[in-house]
Amino acid sequence: MVISVIGTGAIGGFYGGMLAHAGQEVHFLLNSDYDWVKEHGLTIDSPNLGIIRLPRVKAYSKATDMPPSDVILVCLKSIQNEKLLPDLLPPLLKKDSLVVLIQNGLGVEKDVANLFPEVSIAGGIARVSASKVSPGVIRHFDHGRLELGSYNPAHSRRLEEVAVTFQTTGLPIVPVADLQALRWRKLVWNITFNGLSVVLNTTTDQLVGHPETARLCREIMLEVIAGATACGMELPSSFADEMMAYTQRMRPYSPSMKVDFDQKRPLEIQYIYQNPVAAARAAGYEMVRVDMLAKQLAFLNEKNGY
Image (tube, rainbow, N blue to C red; front, side, top):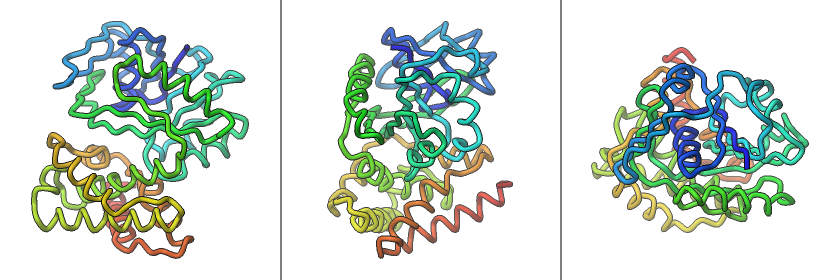
């Protein structure tokens, strides 16, 4: 199986690197650190997995130099899809290619399907703590579970085959039946900790370790759960407690949006905040706290030049 990674940052570098380490044929599209990775390869530095060095990887600076692929992992920030995918994706497509969007937020599959109506699309939710800390170096802090759901139900069997290939990494890779429910479940965590870490300039351990911010985290989670329920996704309120406990067990971590903000990169406000708020509102429920967080992030994003 030929696998290509578009966007070799923390997520693309981690899962693509683990696949390459497992012996799979993986091709990496890179931007700023292409020269470094071409010469030195990729490194995954993990307290759980050890230091995984891949001194030689199939690295490219242009999609047109890459081979047509069976599976294409899109690990760009979701806000880059409309601008970049029309140029980057076509050279990699075959008749039966599966595009897997390992991205955050709600509505990414729909928008990419509008750009490529004939392409088989799946979504991936990465439950992993990882950051790119220097060119070609991915720091893996914790976890690693990848959940995959098909956007085109007719191609769900193909996704199961892909999941089997991913399982050679030794990571927990799980195909799921309901992609939209999967996205809302991840939003319970993402909306809460990505946004608050930026607005309050802090990390996950401090958010769950202080009584007042811990209470605020749980209130936001319950509001997202109510929004999901209004949209037909049955999530129990106990899921908020589960996510709080999950975060308390994590090593101290700066979520991806905090890293983006600190490095003055644009924030994924549309897909992580605005789309869920709009979906819940259309279903008759107002996510007041989430909407306020979205407006605060939009202000800070503009202060950063976006």
